[in-house]
Image (cartoon, helix red, strand yellow):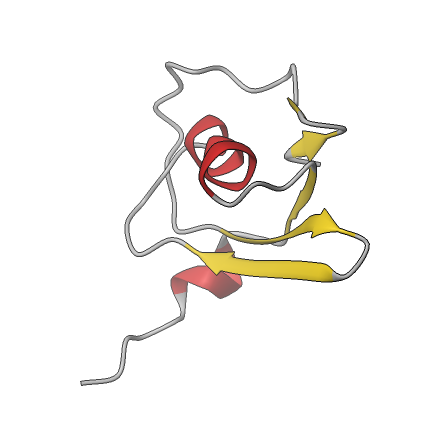
Length: 75
């Protein structure tokens, strides 16, 4: 879990250098789901903060890094 009840997972380090392309899903409320994929390599902390602060999700789940890295932007 990235975010649980509005709190970033305590296992994540804000200064972590572990950065990859990440994808996840978040819940804004009972009726709104948000899917996100990073364009650049990001840490778990940064990705969790995206869901919590910018997307307004109280809960968010990380999908994976390997599959997300295979995503290619259309040109």
